[in-house]
Length: 335
Image 1: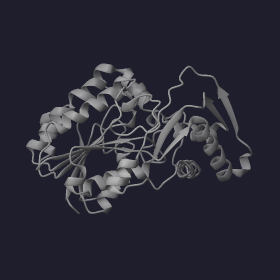
Image 2 (image 1 turned 90 degrees about the horizontal axis):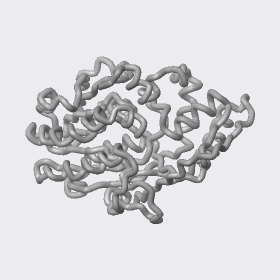
Image 3 (image 1 turned 90 degrees about the vertical axis):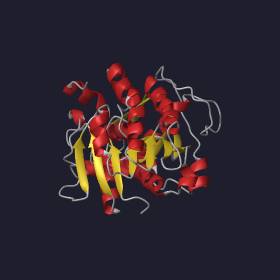
Image 4 (image 1 turned 180 degrees about the vertical axis):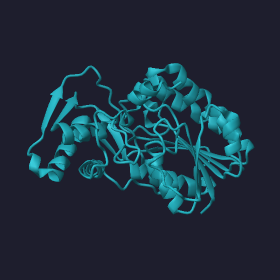
């Protein structure tokens, strides 16, 4: 391993809940620094190499103490998705933008050697360009996406030979995780197909890039290990398939019918929508520079979710607020 210790902000979130145990398995000493809106019961227990800290990234002094003796930071924490952001713009701005540069400075001052930042592929907004590469102009449609993009240069402003920074722009993550989200497109459609017996598609022609959660985690692990010269001050798109909403629905229908044959044919209902935003990204650069290609399809993500539902891992999937970021934040009065 290039480094021994890593601090993951948001390590108890959807992606962090899959990433954390895999980093432990690789031999890292892991500190999860998380506000724990969703708890931490799903993280590994009794592992001497895991430290779980209930902390707010806006508390720079607390964070600075936890950064002592840390080699690498993986910054995943944020108020995630547009709906959650709009719920309380002041809160979201303070977490997603205002806290970012002080955190970077604290990491550098603590002697952290590498800072990996999870941005988003939605920074580009809607584009007619056939290939939306990393140098495409950023025209984000929401403040969530805008702030994600604004933080990238704030990181690179502080990097040098001893403090290497890299950002990645993942597509929408999908699939099963111990801290499950059921408020992102593939997961929403699968939940409805399995538990309502019907898939409702709003529009259908809009493109949505997606990324299996295991590919997201594999990319994080790669960015911890990659040589400095391959990643320093750079940005990488990462998505697997730019599929339309209708194509995703058809994949969900196919897989759910295979996994639950006793339920018969699933109905896809199409509903008109004013939201015709269509996103797509090109991920050639990460393949060329880091030789990274996603290995897991959207079909696999749907199949993993189907099996989690069958095994009773996702009970009360419509009523339990913990699967839904907006509902959880509203229920706990996040501030």
